[in-house]
Length: 106
Image (tube, rainbow, N blue to C red; front, side, top):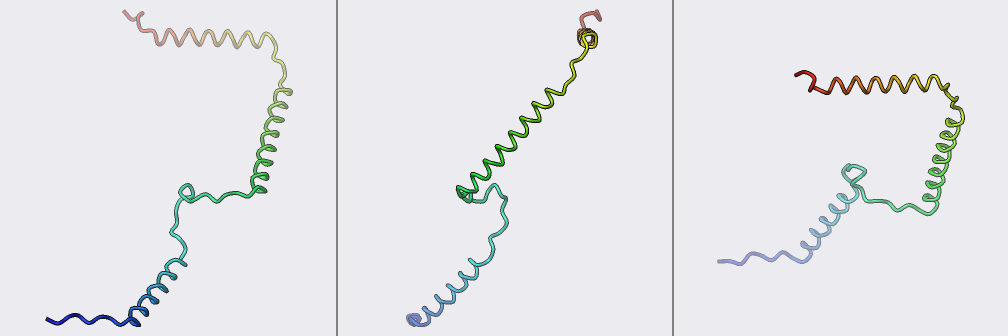
């Protein structure tokens, strides 16, 4: 029964250096693709945050202006027109009630 030979220190060191170089090559490769919602978040700088808030504020102000302008530009409808629409709505409501109400069948 013979004892297995012990590898020399130099051989072990050379193998470790080769393995280290392989690891460096593996780590230098680009990471596999992953969806954006799984990526770690990159913190934004103060300037980026302020810019984003500025854009958001501007967008909201523009929307408010559009909403205001659309409210101003509406022409008042004539009273007759409003009455007609309300009557049509009432009729439609009654007809749909009759359609869904099945007690009159028996």
